Image 1 (cartoon, rainbow, N blue to C red):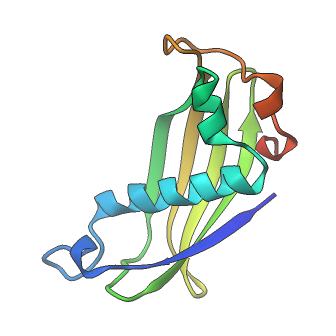
Image 2 (image 1 turned 45 degrees about the vertical axis):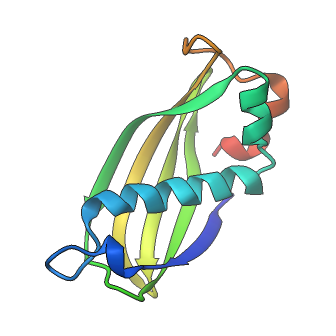
Length: 130
């Protein structure tokens, strides 16, 4: 499954060069991952209430082109790997047909102590698998 969402670049996200500061791409990717989880039927707030969590363990970003104020960006998210307690999502940030950045995000599920743990069955949804 590929989840697509869009957002518009705000002025305060741009640096002195006039383009989006690279740190804001992390926010864009996080927004899109949450939309992806909702799209595959993963109830994140309920997971937290149940005493579990999903942490980002690693983010690899390749920046290709800059984004600017008022650009409409589309972020695509898809699973590429799913293990017992972790997985990897591929994400792309585009402006129209232009690829601006691509990322691989490794996530891990944890219990209430922050120890790696299998997701409870209710949250081990098929959409997390490639």
